[in-house]
Length: 389
Image: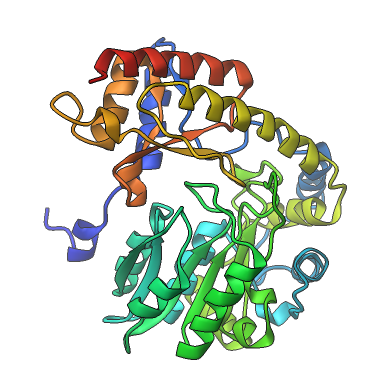
């Protein structure tokens, strides 16, 4: 069978493939500890489930407008005003089947053949592939201490530069940009008329810093910014597939036209559930963050106790991006080889840094129970001691 050049060019998601392999090993009866998954281990709140059940009982199971139901778009606008100091109208909101779809559609809306998209490294695994799908070219900039340097950004911009993708809090590093840092980046983008896709899906999972959206820095950058968010991480609703984006009406309408022919509307039931999530009690969020912070501190401490591993403490999300390049050599060829052997020999699943553009590192997730983390890291320590130089 002859596949299209595009299909041949797209790489599989290493995060999904390794998570899938770990699950398959568990089905075979193997005692696998997964420190790979990028989803909360908490259950969806009951008020959200109840809203979904009511939607089903009320027969709210038909198509909706592609861009989302009015009451959800109003709730998103209110949330953006309340949490992010951003003023949008419902016509500037697009509800999608997960934040991933929103990101893909915005890239397809803004980027065409030959356009350049600047992506700081490390980056979320799907950004580069999405740019490829749109026919654009990814320009990768190595971040300093996991953050984009404004001077490096300025130097990377050409006449073909169309978009900067910024992710804060960041997957896989947990890095969080402060207001001063965002102002400098915004100034570069405004000066060069470069759009910014701001991926803020981990917004509420912060430990020692406050979240600032780059779109809130000033009115000029707001016109160039598209804010992407969703309910997956903050409300433990990964499987509900409900995301959204906010931006200038012209951009949102164009993205909506693309979605018209991709999926139409996001699930009607998930939209009702999302209203309950966004407008309902928020007291579960600090409880989640409190637990994640304890897990983070334990994971950082245990990883750094392993000779040869360097694990910076993240300010947000639920990942530690640890440098394991000390172990590379005859036995271990890189992060993919490290993770494959870690899974095969120690039954611990983690994600190779090469998936995020940094082969020196491995991503460990602490979105799992404390005992799992302890067991997984104990096995990881023994594995590292075994392969150590």
